[in-house]
Length: 100
Picture 1 (cartoon, rainbow, N blue to C red):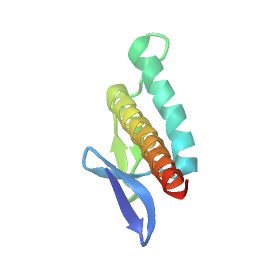
Picture 2: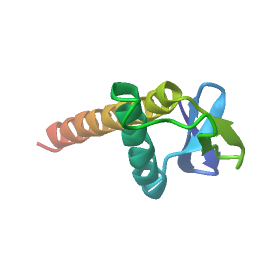
Picture 3: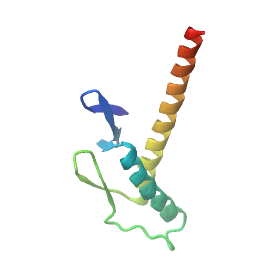
Picture 4: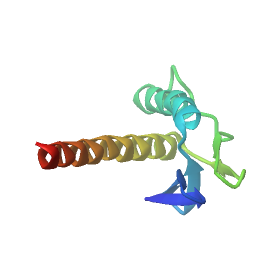
């Protein structure tokens, strides 16, 4: 779920009870975290996951995460962003049809 965290700017994503920033820089950082988590899930011997791993939520709280939890956050944000693109495209197409 998306939430307006600062006036009219939508910048926070709710996942497992925590809000996370999902601006462009935060998503780029999450990409690396998600990739490390995926590698650890697939091959934990080569890519061990420390039990001290965490992601920082929008309130600057360290949220401990297993590799699976980190991958779930990464995936949820990816699905949400993909859905946003599809929704915006549908709106653009509707607007274009009204102007035609």
